[in-house]
Length: 143
Image (tube, rainbow, N blue to C red):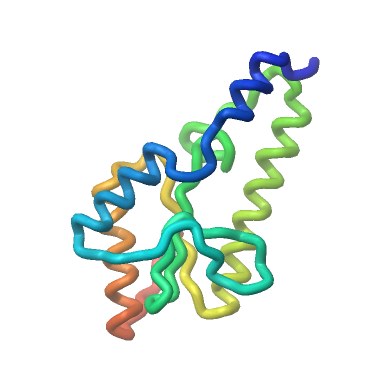
């Protein structure tokens, strides 16, 4: 079964930048006293853009949508055009892992924030990592 024109049109209108979730996270980060850059590439030659970037701390934050990035809690698999969507979402997940690996190899920390996360809690997690890296006390963490 193929995706209907209505669904295709709706999906094409989905914002990829400055989403409500991303803006809420940025407001919480700013309120916590952090300053950052938005929509920047952490590594030259790698066509991947972080949603929020802390250059000095070498922390790149990506705000991932539950549908598009296959959230383990909330991802759904569409019934229409199922093969296309499964391939698309699995490809996004592979690209995310590749991005995280490339950044780690270059000394960066990639942090992923799911759209369903509380922005204040996510900002606190980001702040802790940024401060730890700036103070030189990088801790082991779970992803």
